[in-house]
Image (cartoon, rainbow, N blue to C red; front, side, top):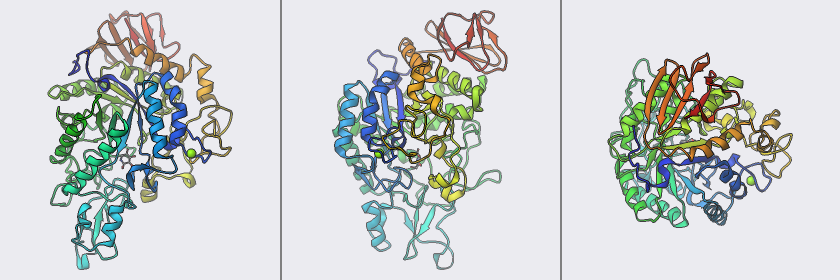
Length: 542
Ligand code: NOJ
Ligand code: MG
């Protein structure tokens, strides 16, 4: 299995490590307990020293923050909570001076209900051009009192909300996030302008939110829901915490709201726009598609650059399951010009230490999975705080802010969004100059997990990430060969290096398996002793 573009001059993003910054929770400059752009800029040297290639910023545009920025009221201005356009420019300049690229988030599926277009649509009559930028429809049943179809919001409850004159509008997410009608050319023109606005300011790429959702089946017909399926419009694959189902193995469901063929025209247009700009600008799709093949359709040579490979993230702790994801990923990408991406955590899912069981074992497994991922050719995405080994936080109900919590009463995603501990013995752990808890309270046992504490400790998770990212620069091979040394052991060869992950419950002897034993990187202290690889450990050996 090999990269589709193995040339030495391939674009930077084909084998980059991209670090996700959740803007509200990375660093606060002004003491209001909410992270902001100047806070991020001041901490960019930390990311350079960590050894990543690029930063992806979650949305920092003008927004009522109902979904913490994924509800955009103005796509070409900065939310005052986070700073100003000048702060965004300063961030870009500083990042580029440090040799870091910057990818920004683009939210094209829906706007905020506070967007001027939606406000105009509410003020206008049914059938007006203002309404035609969104998906307004008459209801069903007597007096149209029933929603136009049976779709359910990803955040729970009906995907339709009724307005005063009796019409309904579609929102696949919160009612404050009305979906655009991408069959209306005005919408495409708006977003071409948005792309150009940020490209002109120097961004290196876009992470495209809900990339598989923009175009709905034109009929807006009912979703056919099988007896064994949850009713819903993809709540199992989108933005929620159900990470235990294998997307690869589950049966295909009827999804008239996702992954429609016409969506690809949007990305062909964007491809042409990006190609006008110098310097390898890129796009990465957040597309919770049902199969590796449908993921690959987003990254055909005239569409997007990358697509998140969520199959890796949802894989259970199993050597054969991990191996299957690797093999299926390369197979699906073989026919397109794209290369794979890998990701274990983001702001929508339970942190991977916790997913793998939490505590010491969860951390050992998380570090091992990370080292394995970083050994794969292609691009890896890291989520802020995973380099500190942070676990999912149990946020008390009175502090929860995720819209899905308000709509469903389920815990939601706040637990992976708690602000980063930088230094000190108690909250806010250097997150900002304020003295109080930040917007989501930090646990009182994080003193040992701060950046400052971990920089002092060569065995810390932070030290491990820094070593692994440095060692990764030596892994230049663009092809891998899968080895199957033992049932619970995942191994692949990349040039003269073999990456080995022990998913079993007992140690394995690498020499006895015919594998090399000289370590280039290990997932933790004591993971490799002599030629013995501990359970839940990973190594790069040669
Ligand atoms: C996916 C984003 O990652 C998530 O945080 C957001 O809530 C939804 N899209 C809606 O924009
Ligand atoms: Mg602030």
